[in-house]
Image (cartoon, rainbow, N blue to C red):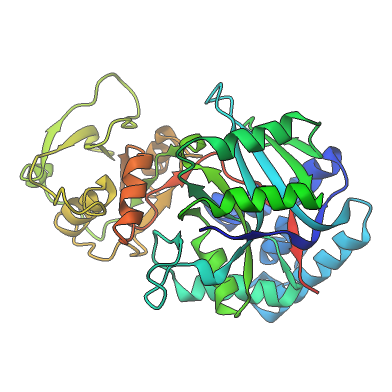
Length: 412
């Protein structure tokens, strides 16, 4: 059973124009701090100046250190400045409906219910039957940094994205009826052309009806934001900010890799035990769309297609069956000697950067190899969650993503 509560005090843009000025991609959608700094140079009012204060172009040297006392003080000052501005207002005791329309997925309404989820509902070793299932390991240092931001600002700005089964489609239908009954309170188009719409739901009867429907969902799967929910739990908070989308309305894009090697890699023929080695169809950068196909690029190799051979993985283990795990074992560990999937020689690149971008990094000498992988399917993702296993690190790039700064929860 999924429990969702209204946000006692929600900080939101006053209108859609303000939403376009305040909202931004979440911090982990950027490849590095330099990209965030560039966005803040163009859009100094964006919420990133709070969530990533050390990237603010106007920050002094002390505040340019992530999670430092000086950067957190700057986060608090920026939030106070935002709250004092005419760009935002407070909405008391509200749930919200969040819809994303993606031009790359015509006819699909990704619509979900947002509010406060319970940290006690997160499945852990001590709570093995809790209904919110994480699929990725947590790095304590990263969660601690998000926790310090929450403590410093007394606000939860980062939203956790969940998938729920909605097997009969009634949750999506109920949310669509509510959304179609009136104009959205906020509407903004993001950098990729996706339209984000928000409806605030504060009427007590409507809130209760939505809570009852959510309680019919037996479980939820954390699609994006494991560290944001972990930060709230780390602080001992009862709730965290989340949105629950029907799983069949969500999309998953490719999550690729760039690799730096300490020495020239062994001959590619050494991969033949686990892969059929061939050429991709057609010219240009190769991005697989079908699982069990992997792209490999190097300046001297060009683009090569690796097809996973049968028997290379344990088909009964949902996590071991993910292409990213096969590549970690058979390419990075066995071929390149990179045993730790979080080794600094591996860079994770989400679907907001295409295979051509990866090739350019290699051609420029910034990286040695590019590896492209097909998107994980929703069925694979759910199977891993239901087996209580962890996804390979950085293997699911859910898109489109929730936009930061449209709904924030004040704690003071």
